[in-house]
Length: 236
Length: 236
Image (cartoon, rainbow over all chains, first blue to last red; front, side):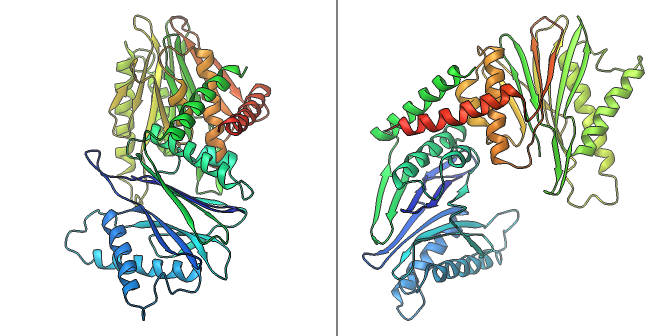
């Protein structure tokens, strides 16, 4: 399973993804689910993926191969984030259509959800949720975050804290708490967490990988856990 | 949808269930999902149901009809909670088997999950989760609560607070917070909440219905919401 969150705030964008994949509970592995396409000063694009790992890797490979061919439309040549979303949606459709031609499709879900966010010069930062059908929706000021994967455990804290005016720093803290709740309740979501923040018009992503023993994450986890218990006990 | 929680603690049992049912988002109704079979001083039995409403009502009707026939095994004559779980599991199987004989079964899920808890004189209090297949598992000191229905939003707070030693009062408070988180994040779970507590060897259930405007629930909801935001802001 997977847990990914992306937010579009007044200050910019926040992205985070866990790195655990599993088939059943005994085939666990670590794979990057955050993919970055950046040309400093001109465009910063981030993809988070959740779903069939073969589909995911195939879609990313196609997107990367297209970049070698400058005559093809690709993530470095599209003129808008909307165009990028269309390109990715079309690629998902092609990849899934090919998988479904196979002889052994029985019961396999080839689906892939993608969160696509970023900024291309000339536009404001934008955030999309691209569905397995290739269509997509865009975040607005009223709906400032999207989740994919194992979304429910970590949703209550986001619903309480996040809105369009939340700062990137506060949103980052809230995202880590949302991951902590999810990881506690679901074995199939696991550390490390890939984390990226983007400030509007900076055209420069700040990316880090947060490991299990990360000092800030540990202090947040402990502070939140003990604070919650204390708050719980104080209530009448 | 539905949200039900039941706990087996050292002090006794706690049961809670919402009352909203829906088919899609536009056919909402209020139905009791908590069913009580009690003979003061001798047995106290509670059922919480989640799943197909027709199956649920049919199972409850069968269980009630059996009570009229004293020669049949029924919830007032079974000698143990294990026997009660078997009786309910068998009834679920019969009802679903009959529904599946119909002409219009396409795509309908006739399944029903039941949480069954209580005490019959001669035994300690016990708690079971009965599956749509009619088989079941029992809560132990290591796993002191079961949920059915829309379980994920309200699970993180239970995981942090509830264990076998938690008092009935604390567990009740935690349950209401768990409901608050679920109701906030999912439209299809709604007030009022049916609530029951049972102290070991009392053979007397305390039952109440908690409405949206219940004073304690409102103060808990507000105290928890503002406490969470304050805790969040205090963290580094």
